[in-house]
Image (cartoon, rainbow, N blue to C red; front, side, top):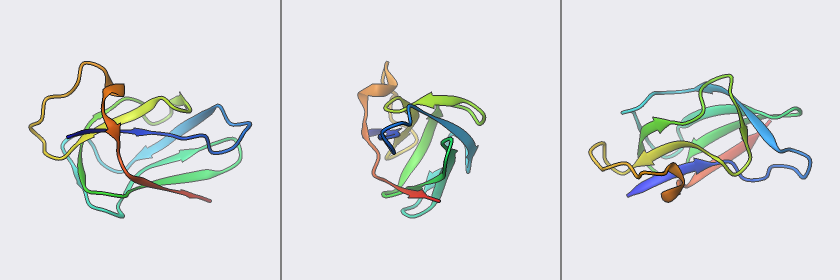
Length: 101
């Protein structure tokens, strides 16, 4: 199955979030609980941890990029050989844990 990481609204006044660092690249398997990416708002650091296992297939927002809330940051799948969708928004949401510092 194809999944996506989409950042939910973290605070009423936050419309964008910056990607600080990806902790792997396309083709890497992330187990439940592993740190996938670090993000920041104007006020806080946010760790995104896998809530389920999956393979990172495509990064849609590189380190240093600002991304709008609700827009997919990356595409994941259960295996590394699944066909990617035409639109990254077509996948289900990957279960993740957001840890705000």
